[in-house]
Image (cartoon, rainbow over the protein chains, first blue to last red):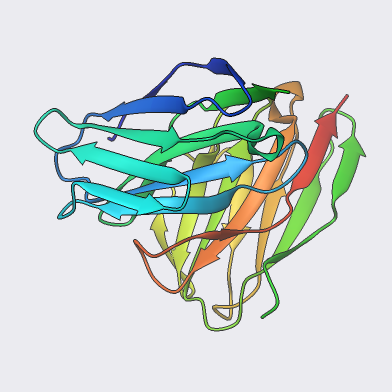
Length: 110
Length: 113
């Protein structure tokens, strides 16, 4: 089955700085890579996703890159704000099954 | 558009007791998922339904967990008997189809004492 590894497990950044989270996956058949944000005590919510035929996607301050050859993808948050503090999960989808990474706790310091 | 509904939101039981969770997906979503999220970990898929059929239940501990989606809409997840290690948040999610964006419910926080 698919194995998704996510790093770092915790990330503390100064407000206004950038945050980068990296994930690797094992199954070359995975073709869809969503990122979820989960605030404390709340449900995971999709913030951005990328499909295997695209190398990069951007939505305002959030961007995701995908390197299919190396089987890794990354989330980039620029100009971080306090409301960006949350746990971020990467995931990889193979046909129908979504496998999550272990999560990165992001803390934005004011 | 109404989101995914789950109940109860919280449940506290003693080990060896039984418990059931209910999920109502977004209208029109054919695919329904149950996840277990242990504190500090990412959600782990327990079972996935396509309409009323099971697509994947490879990580469901079938000796104690069961789930059904009889009419292809609502779903229930049952644990019988519960163990201490079952303490977790149980998330239900739905999507239009496999590989589409999944929308999560608020979850049920289960504590087994």
